[in-house]
Amino acid sequence: MASFKKYRVDSNFRLSQVHPGESPFLEGDEAAQVAEIDALAIELDEMQDLLHAEGRRKVLLVLQGMDSSGKDGTIRWVFSRTSPMGVRVTAFKAPSDDERAHDYLWRCHAVVPRSGEIAVWNRSHYEDVLVPVVEGWIDKAETRRRYAQINDFERLLIETGTVIVKCMLHIGKDEQRERLQARIDTPGKQWKFDLGDLEVRTKWNAYQQAYGKALRATSTEHAPWYVIPADNKRHRNLMIARLLMKTLRQMKLKVPPADPALKGMVVK
Image (cartoon, rainbow, N blue to C red; front, side):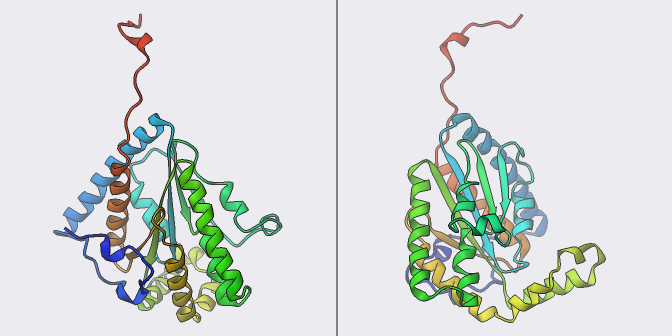
């Protein structure tokens, strides 16, 4: 059985340690892999019911990654059997004028999960220690301040009942090229392509360096980062589904005690 240990980020971690094409969590043939993802999706739905019934804690799944790393696909597959009533997805785009008028964490705090809810962030507050760093909009001192602020923000969420799962979808440059080309060549996918993706791609090495530094600085005991090899889509989905289910099982969720007044009650 594959272990998450290698993929959990610590202060000595280097992104180059993980090859984006490796797939240690894939076992058996394709049919067996798809069946496991589906089984995990069903169990996730059951766990979400328990989380909602308990009504005290929350779960935040953070998905970060380069363009075309599969954030949308992960959400589609991992939560394919989950009631939409208990899962809320937020996609973080470039900040609006209103968001720029506030501190950079303002828009994030507005969409943290409610009690009994799973929130999924497609990109996140980590955009603010990636894009500004690569573009040179903030200096090293400001970057360090933001790392510390993010750690404090996440500690606040943890201490108020939120369990955080952070996944960096690690895609290779060649795989990204193929996926971007597929978007260009497929009429039904062209809407997903943005010319800006090509500009970002020219800064690939700078982004890899920025990711590495951000992961090391913000992978804490209470909110660790996991790097997910994402060239293989099934592996990506399966690894994240297993990690999320492992986290939910460790929460030991339970249905709250029944109201004593219900004992012996008969509905007529």
